[in-house]
Length: 275
Image (cartoon, rainbow, N blue to C red):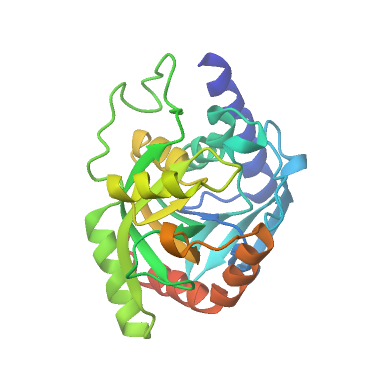
C-alpha cells in the first residue's frame, strides 16, 4: 500500500507539472467511445507510455491517451482508452488511474462501456444508465491492507451510482431527445464472451447488461468518495435463445454508430452537473 501511495503521488505530480490542471470531472471512455476526448478544448494530451507508473491499453478501440482540458465549460480529465483485468494487469493496475484522479481532485467520474444487452427491453444501440452493478470478475481491487487516506476499510456500495445523478442523466436525455434506459451492469473477467448457460445464469441474477470493465473502477471511486455516473452502450444483444456469434469488430462498429448520441448525452450531462 505504501508503494501504491508513492506511485499515485509520483504520477499525479507528473500530470500536474505537465498540464497545470486540477480537473473536477473524470471521464473513462469505453471501447469505440474515445471520440468524446477529441472534443475537449484547450486540451493537453499525454500518451500513457510517457506517464510514470501507467499501464498501456492493448485492446483495439482504446487509444492509450490521457487528455486534460475543458468540455462544456468544465475542467475534465479523460481516459481515451482503459485497462482491463483480462489484459493481464492486476486489479490495482486496472484502477490506478482512478487513484490518480482522486489525488488530482476529481469529484465526479463518468464511466462508460460497450456491453452486451441481457434485458429484452434493450436493443443494440441503446444507452443504459447504470443504477447498480454485480461484480462477477472473481476479484476485488480493495483486497489487501487498507490505506485510510484513500478511503475506509469497508466502503458502502449501496449508492455507488449516485441516485440523484441517475435521474439527472435521464432528464438530460429526455431534454435532448436521446432515449435512455436504466439497469444493472454485471462485470466478468473476460476475455471470452459467455456461453448460453452462463448468460441464462447472470440474467437470473438480475443483470441487464454484461461487460468486462467498469465495476473495478467504480468500486475504487466509491472507496475514494468520488461520485459516479455510469453509461452502458449496448452493442449487441446477449439473450441466450436469440444468441448470434459476436466479434470485437462488430462491437466496435455498433459503438461507432452509437457515438453521436452518446457524445450528445455526456456533453449534456456535463453542462447540467453541479459540483
